[in-house]
Every structure is written in structure tokens, then in C-alpha cells.
Length: 157
Image (cartoon, rainbow, N blue to C red):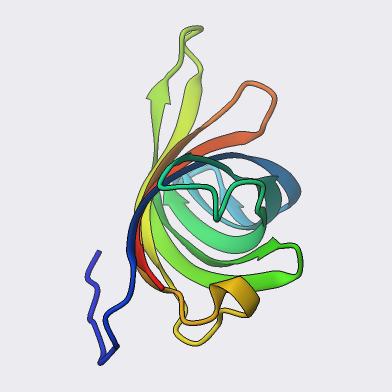
């Protein structure tokens, strides 16, 4: 992930670790070519963050997101946008990453994703006004179809 910093006033820096479990709202396959192993899809999800490090500003924050991906034999890029909301205050995040499959305990493939993202400049309202920064994420599919995610970010307000 490359982050290019614009001009900003110095603020309070926060090292934050968040976890959540994404619940799938929509998963739409746009291409599924079994002969080549290519697949393209759109997805939407929601979750609630638990803050593990860096205070409680983001604890209990509601997250809704959407994205798209293109896979070749279980590996490929994904990208999307999230809207995060707590008690009416919001901010947006743009993210991208890669997904891949590894064998699970039963020998069936389990999806993993890793990447990075940043707070969309000027998107914060209320307590999130002026929020900037970014970080990385990693996650994996759960047996019930949900997706467990951990995020580590350096943010400034």
C-alpha cells in the first residue's frame, strides 16, 4: 500500500486495532468460468467493530461496505469502500487488497484476504471530522460464510 500525504495540521496520532465479523448482505457472481478458473463478483456486508487497542473512539462502530473482486484459480485482487458510523457520526474508507485460498482443517479451501486502506479525505462528520490516516487489514472466511477481519491503523485527528 502506498500512502501519499497531503498538507495537514499536526493532530493527535492514534494507533488503533479493530476487529469485526463481516456478515454478507449480498454476493453476486458476475463471471464464473470453470474451464479457466476465473471468477468475478460483487459483494456487500455489514459488521460492528470491537476496538482492541488505542482507546474506545471506534468501539461499537457500525460498518457497511461493498466491493468487487476478480479471482483466477482462487487468487486475485479485491477493492471497495466502507462507511463507518457511530451514533450518527460517520467517515468513509477506501481499501484494496488480495485474496487467496489455503487448505482448511477438512482439506477444503478457506478464503483469506489482506490489504490496506485509508480514510477518504474530508469524509468525517461529528467526532470523526478531520480524521485521516490508514492502515492494513487481514481476514479469513469462517465456516458459516462470515468473514473475520483484523485492522491495524495509524490515524490522526
